[in-house]
Image 1 (tube, rainbow, N blue to C red):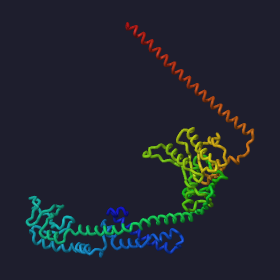
Image 2 (image 1 turned 90 degrees about the vertical axis):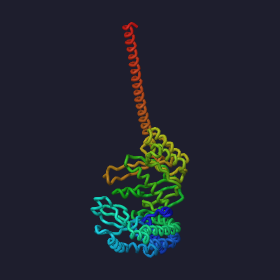
Image 3 (image 1 turned 45 degrees about the vertical axis):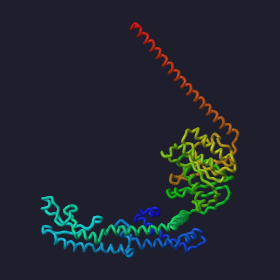
Length: 497
């Protein structure tokens, strides 16, 4: 808006908006001034919202006639602002009666065949004498009248310039254009004065945005029962009954989930489960709760203890774009590379279904290597929450045993209806595994060996089939060539070659 004013390209709506901003800013300042000044934001608003705002609002209110500006769709000033403009507007308002008297006198000087006439004013053209068309003029196609200068034909009326209309042009001039020019000059002066006070308007935008954000967070916290988080310097995140602030408003029943991440409870959570069981929502609610706590907001939970976090790195849903020039998997790799290169022990990493954009072996390998990279430093591992459907990640023991690593399975209970689905979270930690007997372990090993043997036999059978098919194709091709050579030899013998 201020940029358009500096370029003299201001609309009536801009003046309306500027007046509302400055007037409401004065009201905000007066309200905040009566509140405790121990609050830093209140103190800054009281100091930043200076008397320049009252000057801007009062100046615009005295100069701009908003009702007339909206009706005429251009900048119009109020009376008693510029005497020259007021004088010309008075002439414009009395112009109708004056021109009626002039037309009555002009009719006395015209031919008796002309029944009536009128004197009109057209901006940029001036004063003209308008008479109706006469049948004799249509027959001869001659519109000239003695003592008058023909200007143009408009529908059934002829327009001329007489000696009297020329005198009016000299005496009164082009009133409409002169008024517009003078009002434009006043608008330019008003723009310059407003632009001079521009810094206070920028401060109004900054502090009003902060105040609006804090009020919105406070209202949401009170309406949806958010709790005040406890921030600490520890490397831990503990949230009880954590909820997603948006999803809970869209569902009839939302089941809260706990969040535990620390050196004792494990800092890497591998979450798996069937589709649509809430894995992605769980990751997002963890990120939102931590982010809201760090910006000074209450969080959607019953209790929250959150250590300081220096960054939140995510590999969530990737949006393809032709302008980017990258595939979906390449975008995923860039996000993972950013997390691997920059995440520290105080970082929060959220990974949702990484590795689906390529073949299973490559995706599983990239995922496992990234997790092993974060587990390698030990206690310096960042807070990692990952959802995946790669069950081979823990079935094949691709990750090392570590007290920082735990697996969580999210599932839907069948004993409740769909609308009352309760997502349970079962945590299996390497350091708290139940003791497995040697017999069970041997049985699992034997089953795994049998499975691998069956797969190897099946693979050998398929390889042998491919070899047999290839050999058969080569024999068929060889027989075809032999028959072709025999046929050509007989044909040449018959023709005497």
